[in-house]
Image (cartoon, rainbow, N blue to C red):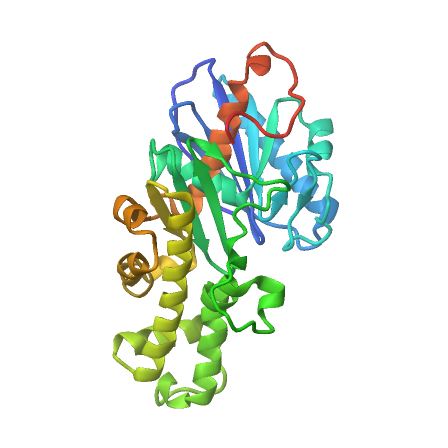
Length: 347
């Protein structure tokens, strides 16, 4: 993978390391105290999972340490996120897209290999920390980051503190109940995710094209892949095709209800909308910004701002770096002691 190196004056200051472990890629970065990214790299996740991915993470940590040293600096702390859960008590992680990472002792293994302080969080936490630090919710204290991609999840910040819940399950908003009729698909993913995620849109688009082949145009031949099906249906909706408009409006309505429930429950200053679905803002941002208000608590709806992510796919990296800086600034780490927990500061 192509590396991006940004030149920086040599100094003896500390740098934060950030590692964003995704389902298919791992991104790593060095970030200074002001939030400037000095180095960034991406590699593919090893498909065998388990210890192989652990070895990748350790190797990337060593790479960040070496890169910092070449700039005359030191890796002060490492922040990393996983696409799943990080138990705040045990440090065990669960990442359903990585084989062998169910109740995986990630933090324990990393502490044996890495000497600097480290902190591990969920990707939801990283998203909201990143946007509140350097993104669309900069300097806000009550923020929700709603990620709508293959699935749906939310990072929740209240009064400057991340809400994790008992087992880091807070923010699993794909399970919001938005339909009185319980469908079979809800059992595995939750109502909100089954009806309104990017994966849901792809599933519904494929079904619609199978029932209405003419929507694919005269050159349509066979069943398209999910991404192409979504593209076809979105374009058909823009052109006013009734069946496509009905599907898109159904997804819009569920998204509006989900956003409204979050706004009414948490009364945030800002809701940041991110993920692949919002790459079509004309269909899945502007309508939702208007529609959610009829479902939400009126005072909360009037005071909140809905915005698109400013950091895109780098939001999690910035959030990991923010977690690392909070860890560096813990009093015991400033004194040079090894931390005893896997979570730092207000993350």
